[in-house]
Image 1 (cartoon, one colour):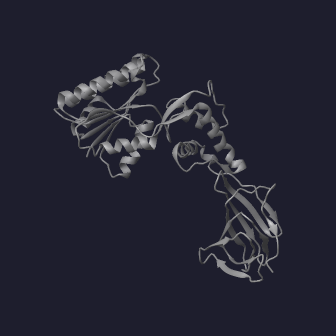
Image 2 (cartoon, helix red, strand yellow):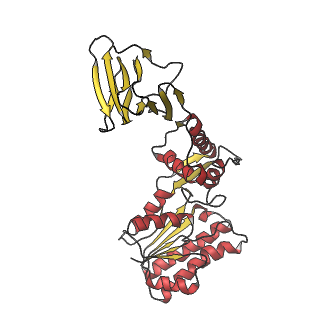
Image 3 (cartoon, rainbow, N blue to C red):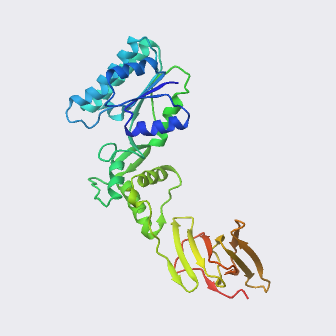
Length: 369
């Protein structure tokens, strides 16, 4: 399948092209501002599907709205009909197509051209009136407020918030291009409007608060819930705007004669991850917890983990090393310790099911033996 993509250097197109290539669609004709009319005509003569993503929303003159939206759409349709082609078109319009501004009117006119083309030639078309789209590769101060804010906050630039209660309808770029890819396999005849799901309704204040939490998480190590939904999508977007010299950050740890200890990451409701190093012959621990659970994983070296029910004299021993990736549970009511029995530094990865609270640590010192 030969696929023509207009606006190929834009935010949506970049994400779509990546998805198409990953899905093994490699015969792509890419139309952008530097493409000539002759090249466009050649593309159309050989295309089997058109993703018409090109558009103008921040021009220097009002005429550019119509040139980049409705006029370009009419040019494409004229070339299709000139060569007696019947090419399905997916068109990215805007929710502003129902408004009375020039951008909305130019998009609505383009929609009418596409609908007429569909009815006249009995060919499928798909019109998406997109709300605010956000995600990686968006252009700050152009594509969306989220693009601008992510760019600014990762560079310590101020965010302009006129009304924090204002609510936006938002769709994530990953969901957008997945919908688009689906239409390549839509065998039913269509001339209709389509919506992206899910749509996230978030206030500017909510978005700002999340971005601030993402930013300070490198210092307090507490990451918000970012595993699903809007938070997952926004966090991925936020990270994509980090400057290239800011991909990493140093952890502040604790060092003593036994070795080192670093907190790595704290979560809102699923505990925290930590890492410790221990010198040969050194024992750590000799305490128990009543509610807190820990998981120990030795990723370098050799260790002996000992556990004892506080009401028993029996000591349970686990010999662990980096030769076998094995997690040992620290069971509540069992005092426990870990000793480096190797000849080199031992590195231990630790997960605890709660964030450490120095006011209520649930750590009770008692020797294993």
